[in-house]
Length: 318
Image (cartoon, rainbow, N blue to C red; front, side, top):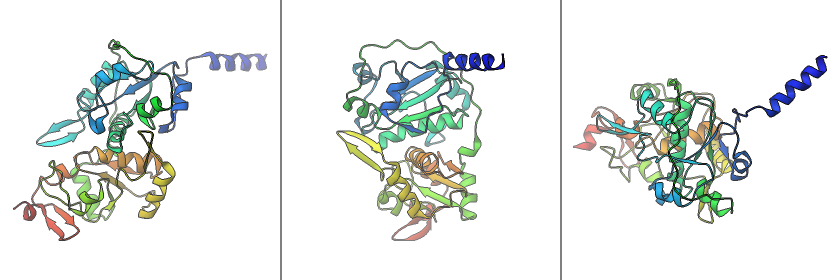
């Protein structure tokens, strides 16, 4: 009798809805193709003009079958506050955004970038981080994005798409993934690891973002360029985990110690956070969404430049 009950339970488990796929942080097109049609799977296409990735019209022209669209740049995934670009919106606003996409807390979300460049990958990484910061762990990124899916010859759908029925999504903020300016100041004081995800010219101060008042980086930080571990194949960009892990090892970071990823406006920083935490295996990584845009608001804060050393924001801004 007991064996018959166990067999019946196993059969129900196999036949029941697979609403928890537990994917790795980064999946390939073959994995996704095998999961299309699964219960509670949402394929979320987040293409935008970044790296010429496209828009809703591009999505309706060609997309992964069954996918939904949300523009990374226009839908409200980030917001400007007090003159600082790229900040995380209020939890309630994100709950509405996600729920309006027909996503609930039982769904596994596959975030699909355009796949047209490393900066475009940051779009998927920022949305992935947002789901994680809201307490939703059933999320992954399609490596190579839609460009990779298409160039591999996998099935593509086209035509207008009706908006999905809205659902209810509830977020619970994980403050451990979000670094405030005060926490970054404390990390600097404690000599904790600060990782600048910008390209080297920004890190050294040779190039300045218009979002930051002055060039330079946070003193004592190390540089892990967000675009350093991608490979282009037939027009699609793929993150290379082995190359990335080697670059992280070269930085000599303690995998258990607190680490903060930052950039200019929390976009490349999201890619840096993803690379450090989800691929590199560092256990205590936060992302500073305000990044250099917020850091340089205060004249008293310090920045470091390769040719001038450490100076105050106010001194540089004069």
